[in-house]
Length: 484
Image (tube, rainbow, N blue to C red; front, side, top):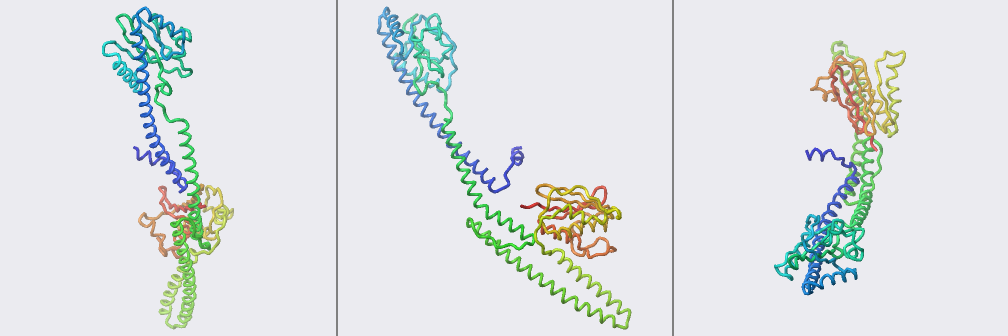
């Protein structure tokens, strides 16, 4: 399931998009790992500082307890009144006849660490005898004195300065210690800054902004670098497409990285070899055309001088077969090696010209057209006309009628040519593209139409395929990519 979902994720097709995506993933992974390590170290440091602050607070509590223990019973309430009148003390202290009951907060790792540290220090200073209760309470649930008075019901000078920290309102640590039976010392306090809230902090806003800025700058500069390095590859692709269409291509500038320079140099060498091969082939077939036609014509003249008619007929048949083979070979070369410039071809107008003789009012309606091209196509006009014309002629020759269906998109132009003939045996769907191969020996021609059409399609980066229709007939599909 995971692999299927991964295959469905959209992946950029361009080199720039894929490099930026991989870089973004790498940056996010690296930043996430570094942030986790940094955050874990920060929290460990904060926990250490929190425990230290809690122990210091506990020592102050222990000193306060020892002080109240040393006072006579009658003086203890007076001292408490003086402390409340003065205000601004670190603790809120009261004497109660019982431990106050209130809604305590559930312990968290930090709260529990503070409670353990305070408890250990108090036990160390006060011994094992007094009962000690240490809990955390929300400020709104805090109760003071025997009557359970709330914090908001007291004068601000009594407790608010020590226990309020607006607008945070952090939890209050309530420590209750039994001094004697029926006498409990109540101490409420806040932890010092920056540990007041007792909550684990996430990544600071400054850290998130820093990660975003560094990732953005890194992606920007990598994008510029990849775009700069990929320009020679784009020029290489454009030159390769133009060369495949027969256009005269200038040597490619050997620039960019060392690998790109090697590719450009190899392309230039290949371009020179192909150009030299095409020139030599054109010269070769021109020579063959000249050298073969002359002796064939001379032989025909000599055959006509023979007195034996039977022998004359045999020689004539052999010469006709030889002439047919020569003309077929030369026509194949001529039709597939069309030297034209790349132009913007109006496909709809080209089709109108091809089917006009069959759909005109004086015609018999043997060709129908469904659909239209959305835009012009960059290619060789005469070659495309010959390619599509061969497909239509083949459909009319073997299927009586031709039905054209056009499917045009931003990436590919597709033309289906359906006929009403018997179709082609499945085992011979590829064999019919071979030169001089014909399913029916009664039809006239050289058996080169489909092969020439496929060669022209290949020269435009496309393809010609065959498919037998379920309802009968053959579908020939011409696919031409719309390259940039």
